[in-house]
Image (tube, rainbow, N blue to C red; front, top):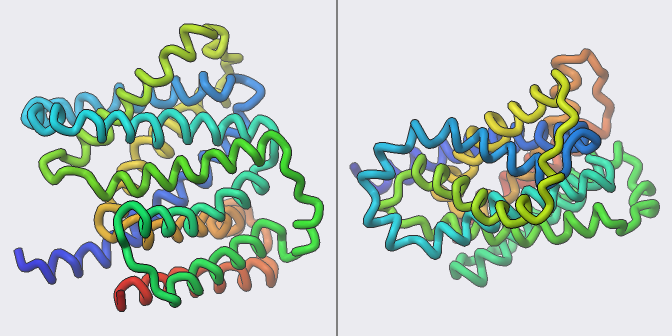
Length: 303
């Protein structure tokens, strides 16, 4: 297939995949906060990826058998993906949500696009144009407007407690994971990559579970079952597939800014599903976020 056609297809598909990942992860933050009293951060992440692996393995088994040589050759790469994206980042987020509000956690996460772009510059040599930095800045301002409900004075009350510190650890971890994705060997299929990342992430977490088996104690209820199912199916299998593919299509520097869609989706879903009203700051924040995304993509294409 013509290379220009492939690139053009990627330019159209990647934004949809990355936006869908951001939408699914918006629900993950809410679920993580809601489940905090019923299960520990390590326990939730372990159950989440155990269930995700049960879903992924039957889908990827044939691919994994065919790709054994590529898997063996890429073992260091897979170990790093499982540690950063599956084990460490998710535990950091759930630990953060035990001690801070969802809005504070997403506010700290809103710094991730800039960190991802910086890591992509250092690790991959991706060029960064002024338009891209302007786009990151505009989009970040839009996210802040949405998170603070247009009251920027609320930022004065933000304190770096334990939850915010956990999120500050999560941001560079996710940036490293996103940059690593760009180095995926072409001989390693997508489904195999995600299934093996889940398996290796569980291996990384197993010593923590063995040392403290109480982390798997769960106060089960219908709500907890639904929450665990959502973070396994939606926020793990579907969202990670969309994010991984989107990053590989357009690169981590350009993909990172789509995380700023997370504070956009919250009020939009509340409006569509719950009949909640939209305020002027919702529109202003969304315009800034989409303007920033547009500037970033335009700058990257010129580069």
